[in-house]
Length: 228
Ligand code: ADP
Ligand code: MG
Figure 1 (cartoon, rainbow, N blue to C red):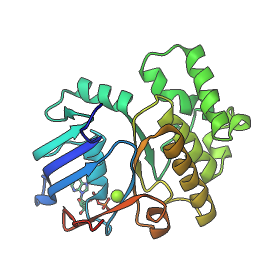
Figure 2 (figure 1 turned 45 degrees about the vertical axis):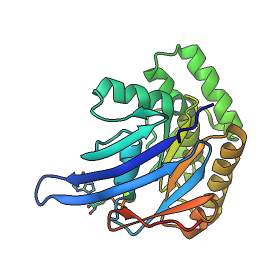
Figure 3 (figure 1 turned 180 degrees about the vertical axis):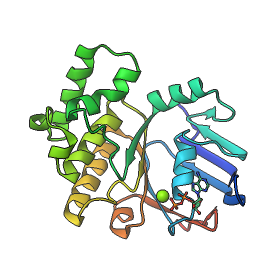
Figure 4 (figure 1 turned 60 degrees about the horizontal axis):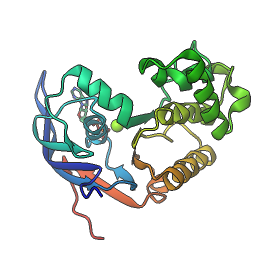
């Protein structure tokens, strides 16, 4: 049995260079356990996306240590970073980030393309996930023919298709009305329960954070100590 957390951050610092240096993360200490559903809240510009990008190995940090599933994530080659991203992590973004000239099925299947999975197998799995998310009849529709909620469900299918252990979502409901936002949150909660996924959601919406098990507050580049 593994005893280490899914995510362990200690003393993470990050400064953006170029122009005036901006010290955004000022010694972040944070553990997130396997199977947790947590939210990260904080004012605009407080470093939420920066932190999520570090967690997703989309960006590097300067000092400290980031351990993901027991592996130290530091000084990785771009190949190694891509390998961890493609196999361990699913991403969901506020603006969905679907490819506009590909249909729902092709968008959902995209991570498998990067893994070198055959077209037939990709399409079969993508259809399975679209079906799971209630989008079977929309498989051959283009993103511009779909509502915001439908597009985000395609993006969720795309995030899940590689069976990642960790889902990172940056303002996943930020572009949705409150009813659709509630539906997307319910979906994430169901997935968390059914698949025991670890899910980290950045949000500024208290209705979203209320639906998570724990809210992490980032302020002035630090995580506010928790009382729980
Ligand atoms: P949040 O997601 O909480 O709104 P961000 O992590 O996006 O905050 O940004 C934190 C701070 O870092 C902001 O002041 C932002 O302008 C700055 N910042 C973000 N990305 C970059 C970058 N690539 N280069 C320089 N500054 C950046
Ligand atoms: Mg942000």
